[in-house]
Amino acid sequence: MRIEDAKLVNLSRRSVKLRRIALAIIVALIIMQLAGCGDKEPRRYSTSFLGAFDTAITLIGYSDSQRDFDKYAELAEDRFLELHQIFDRYNAYEGVNNIYTLNHSGSERPVKVSADLIDMLEQSVIWQKESAGAVNIALGSVLEIWHDYRAEALADPSSARIPDREVLEAAAEHTSIDDLIIDKDAGTVYLADPDLKLDLGAVAKGYATEIVTRELREAGWDSFIISSGGNVRTTAAPPVGERKTWNIGIQDPEAALEGLDDELLFTLQLIEKSVVTSGDYQRYYLYEGRRYHHIVDPSTLEPASTFASVTVVTEDSGLADFLSTTLFIMPYEEGLAYIQLLGDVEAAWVFTDGTIEMTDGLRDMIIDREG
Ligand code: ADP
Ligand code: MG
Image 1 (cartoon, rainbow, N blue to C red):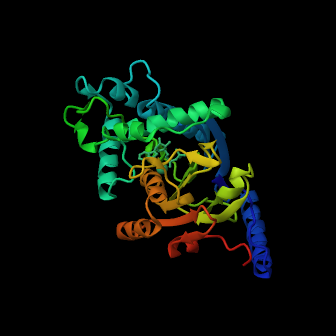
Image 2 (cartoon, protein in one colour):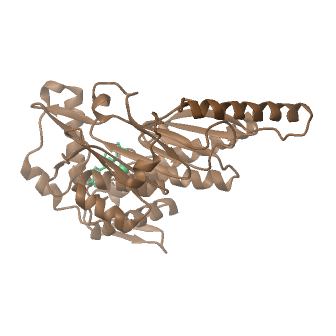
């Protein structure tokens, strides 16, 4: 997924006429400004930073000054880095009880964790119970096996192999969400199965993006977008310029496999929505001509194989992230029925053979480039 920067997407004759009218309005506005009767217009600023959620996080938004923008950007970066540490399953950090801590000592005694982590775990459990558990945050033992095999194969492709069935099945014995014991009042988490491992990879980035969005709004900012890997959160429409929506390009998964990252399937016009794509084309390894990627179907214990990508649009970025991984695993009809039940969720499914299905609501968000 990427953010479109094309300023003009519609070149029809009607738009030429509209542009003349727009030009007249702009000239009038400039005259008003010169006469001292207009307010200072907000301007568009952007920045990117690394270090959180293994991806570049980009912030674009409208502010009255660079100083204002920098203040919001600093708030966002600090918070993303903090949330990254809390949700990280692979690294320990001094003074932080995170997913790594829980996976290593959460079965010895209840571990005190931050309110952000308690809320995140509780919310994920609710979502996964509602959706019958295609995404299971307690699947860590199984995911870890695939993760290690992928890391090995990427380090030395000639040694690529796949895990034995028995090894996967033994790990799957330790994936019951009921063994995750959350005590909200005490602020603790306990794992009743010592071999259970938590993995928040399917939802953490989107969940963190939603928290940061909320906090930026509380700090007084209202027109910006946050793009973190395949997750984009948009807020109020740009207050100035020709565009009255945020335009977000959705990558073509087949082209992306060939390294053509700029090839788009379509571009969505969004306001106050999140759009998240889960795909099989970014984190994978090859073994005997087959691609083994990072989204695992708990019913087969193998990488899900129906889709090349699934894109979800809904307001909450955490839910969008959770659902994009869920729909990537669920059969198409089941996924469609599920989001229809939820309401206010749109989706596009790209099958591995290139076929595309999408909800009518999503089709309505696509920019018609011919029009
Ligand atoms: P990305 O991390 O590329 O944005 P996703 O949001 O789809 O993609 O999440 C993929 C991650 O979710 C994996 O790297 C893994 O950590 C985790 N994961 C994969 N399959 C499952 C599953 N069935 N249940 C829970 N988590 C999963
Ligand atoms: Mg996800």
